[in-house]
Image 1: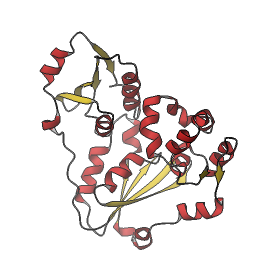
Image 2: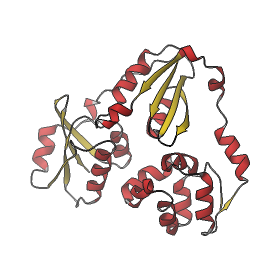
Image 3: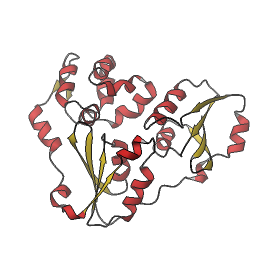
Image 4: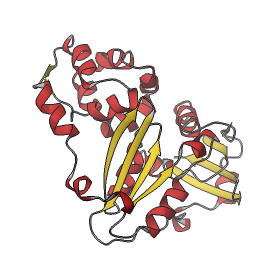
Length: 266
């Protein structure tokens, strides 16, 4: 199989499932791929180039490890040049039109910066570019804003420092992310249905992205007919689309801005 920097991890693992350990051993940050549920979510969305950014390694590290499994890589220099070339919008932005937002202190406190990022996006002018400073490449966020009409570009400035740029394709207004109450099952009804078949998990004291990982890990252990009862500090906006794709239902009981209960079930 021929691979390049744009090859998805799911394609690699589909061709050679036994290559999983080789990929995991490239970087300690890939340990979560051993979790079948996390792997199912992450692998189709992550290319070799994206994974290299997350794992603080190089595309060549993947080529070297995967060559032992019969994977051939295209010319490395041409691929790296294509991937690292800046998009057109990066060539035209002006420094005084860049809005900086460093989310690292927010993440360090265990908080989710998504709502604050969306507030920035909602108020940005068509000529402006939002530059988020982060310790990793936020691929889910880049995909989310791409669906809302924003181009993005991430570059690594230092070992754990990324600058991620967001610029409007055209004049668009990104809607506020709100809970879709019509799609939520009645909390009391669902709780009564699963009252004797509930597995509880408390993720309120975990740092990001610990809550999402812990929830997905717990879901993997659920028996048929059981529901996962989650104590959370917020509605996990990133997680809801993933649960829908896996055909899980979610009932949400928002007691306050910092106290949320979830029931996840099929």
